[in-house]
Length: 136
Image (tube, rainbow, N blue to C red; front, side):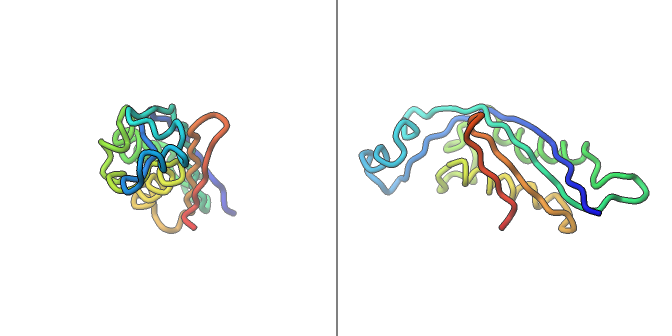
């Protein structure tokens, strides 16, 4: 019997959507206000789900405290109150779109979660705009 446990978290970060190899006009046409050279910010909401078998000894799929610590170390400590373009090495040459951010987060967390578990990350950029990544 497989069950999914989930942990919510949040971080605040600034970014700019643009491609270094495009002109300002090209970037503006594709990314609009998100191409602001002075950056803009979001209050990101994150849901991390881990799916696996229930351990017969503990009754847990995974200790939620352990999942919480991973999220704090791999996401909150590294992304919160940062400029994603300037402060987070993974985005030095990767446009920090919600799609790219969720994949980066998934990869960071995946390294800390045993492979017997399935992992899903949902990232809300705004209350109405969100992306989901399951490693596929």
